[in-house]
Image (cartoon, rainbow over the protein chains, first blue to last red):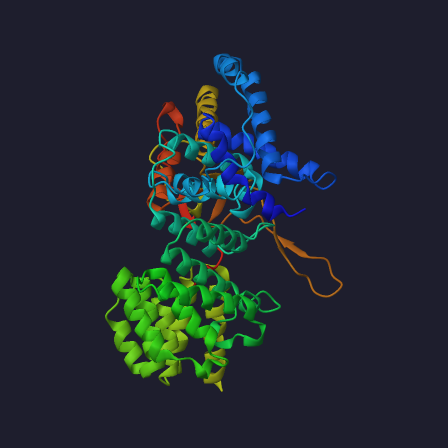
Length: 381
Length: 135
């Protein structure tokens, strides 16, 4: 059974129930119950019309729940009298679901959880596992999110930028547990790109594809982080790179640049270099200039400084770094790298060790500690 | 979201404001304290921020490898150990400020006389998973 295909039906079917007058939270529960039943029933008995099947079963689940809830007796009477919704309704509300689940009234974490459930069709347990929290906690996070958006009108147009921020968060979380969040983020962004014509949606999809292509090379056999410069580029997924570049070029041709297109362009330039020495750092710096102009983000400025160090030499990189807040994450690591390139291993070793102490995650800390250890061993000579 | 450990010490933290040992409390004060902790955890589950909560026995043993073919070497407990952890709560919150706010609330758990203990808690961030996009 194609679970991604099944889950891909989720937002459209929720939309159909909502248009039938069911409130969003109840419709979402009913469709989840329908998904669970599909996972049970489809392997032995695959339906001819999966969407129609899911609509019918979700509708029945809704009726069952309404009947079970005596306080909703009035509604039961009302819905019982109505005909079954037909399969494949004319309106596709998938896009509306994206907007609702990324509504600006939600905190980022709530929007992520709700999107994964109501748009992605993942179970609460799967989402809880992915984010390493108890299932009960995730269930509450999702039901609070549903309450928060309960007053939002379903047919209101939303802002694509908020949806993209949520999908970016899902992708960047990487993956843990048995749910591949990066893969899921790509699926949801691809689906969104199919429902809307927006160059930044394409930009984000390209960015994800280009980074996902490098995944096999990002970690060594022992689980250690392999930095871009040291990756075995033969492990990069050329099919994903080709698709990412293709999607990006189509988006860039529209001449409406945004931050995700700029980030994707940087990733594409890295992907284009068969060896690290062939990297076109001059062009990469130009794209970072665009990114800084578009976002004014300190992270972009920091990455730009490192790229300047490659394009114009470590002294230029250190000069670019000097203008930035030294307390920002990865500033010390960048300084260590540039000092090493500048032929000052003593300063570099000290800074690598310092950066390791403030690293935000374990693989990065291990990597930075290893860099310090390597230089210290050289210095002992 | 980021995970934080709210760490409670038997020993090693600065003295609380309401610094009366638990065995000097009345049974009602003890019950009120336990109830407060439970309610706090329940409330955090409700807000989708609760991850874990555990208490530790003060009795511990130090253990180390004893060499090839030998049993592990044990030692302690050491009465002079400066830092003795009593337990923890793990939370998953949107901001560091939120972690501080919750630690402050947890530290308000009632002790002797039903008054807040004002116990010092240590807030420690978890080392997270590395992000996918770094450059």
